[in-house]
Length: 169
Image (cartoon, rainbow, N blue to C red; front, side):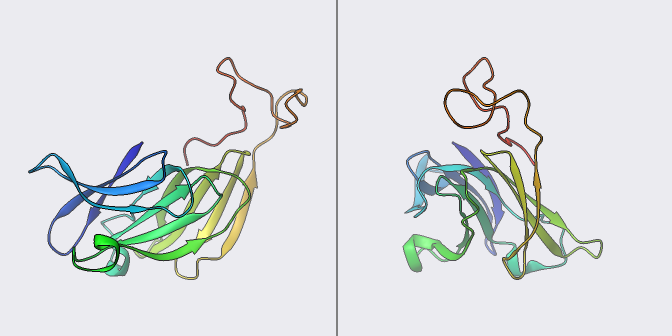
């Protein structure tokens, strides 16, 4: 589905995810998945790692996964001998109502981790405080057209997708 770079204490890693709900670390030496675990939130639609230029190193080995069940799950890349082969579930944010289709971290002016933005299939962008995990802001996209026969309230594009889905933040 996608990938996100995570910097652990040892080396850079590439974390990937599938629509079957599996997160994994890619091992480029062997061409295989090195660590693997279930997202515990269904399909993973988005991955994001915090900015590496940050002065706040407490989240440098984290990856956020946007899940089908409307949650954002934060995983820490740890030792292979650790919990779940090194991908440890640290925190669950949400649920926020609809499938999480995009994620983006934002730094504070001082270089710390400030916010995590999550775009959803229902056209809403949620802002989470990175330290507390609480939603402290929300923006909803304006709907085009009228409700469709599917009952979603969003007009469908040529691919049959709701026009209100946020695919990037």
